[in-house]
Image 1 (cartoon, rainbow, N blue to C red):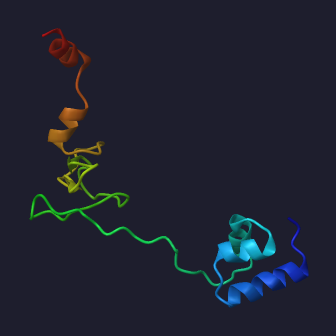
Image 2 (tube, rainbow, N blue to C red; image 1 turned 90 degrees about the vertical axis):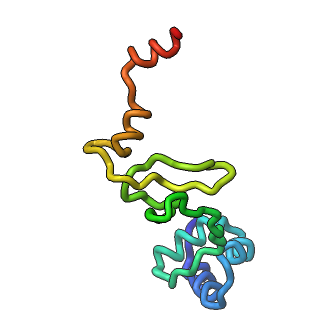
Length: 123
């Protein structure tokens, strides 16, 4: 779409009235992405996301370590404890082994020699 001075002014007016990007897009016959992109390029004031944040069903399994849920980056071991689909769950958070995303214990569970796996399969 080629933005004209009148369409930019209309966008600014509707944005100033507090209409959502979807509502503005519908009124102007454009996509929501086009509205958001132009609003960003015009440096119109940002609005809070209309997407509601989920309430957490995560509880700490170890009271000495804080519960962490995705998508937050864990600060320690990234091994997930608990049932991810049913909850509750948390990251292990123990000190990471050098050059690994996991603590020593979980690193050994994730990365095993092929000979070890072949031995288990053969039994």
